[in-house]
Length: 295
Image 1 (spheres, rainbow, N blue to C red):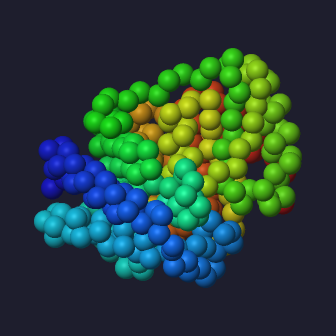
Image 2: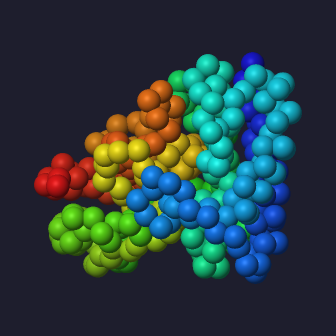
């Protein structure tokens, strides 16, 4: 039974797993990496995988395994095959051992360890994100709020005297709607009363989401995409819990709840992604998407 006390305990275990994996990652930061490429991925950021990705996932899974046995949980990791047990067990661990591998290879900001627990019906129960480069730990348990480095965290309010920033994945530079979106976003920012606007391309879905938490003038947005590629459950499971507990907005590009346990696929690109700290900004971005002519 995943009651409040159990979830609290599991949240602490998830924090330990994320931090332990994070320290393993940092130990290898200055080492030359064996870089492999995944098939059926459209961007360099989603293709690259290193031995450190696999080692970090093994580390996390080893720490989580006793909880899997005790509470009859499933486990889904980016670097392993989906055994579909997530569709049958009461809840499943959802692991991205090294989100932002390209940033890690380049020794840049943008890589994180992400550990989430999701119920069979897709409800996010636990969200933990650890940035080992800056030793920043976000953690949340359903109905218990959000912590940053074990201190209560609340997002600030957007400041219209600063620029409104649209965060997008690196691959968006090649999207046919890149320039029209940039133009429309500048107009949107002006309509909302912001003094300026920027469109920024960055590595790491988890990194982008956490940046929205820390800077409410940011919004992270992805258009829907066709095909079996793009962001997956492990890219969004933990941060969805963080945003729910922070009172922030995470939804698809139509404004609907994210489907965090899709039967058809682990991919989440079918309806797009939106993260925002402010409801007004989120509503404006949904309107921008609805008015944008899709290719």
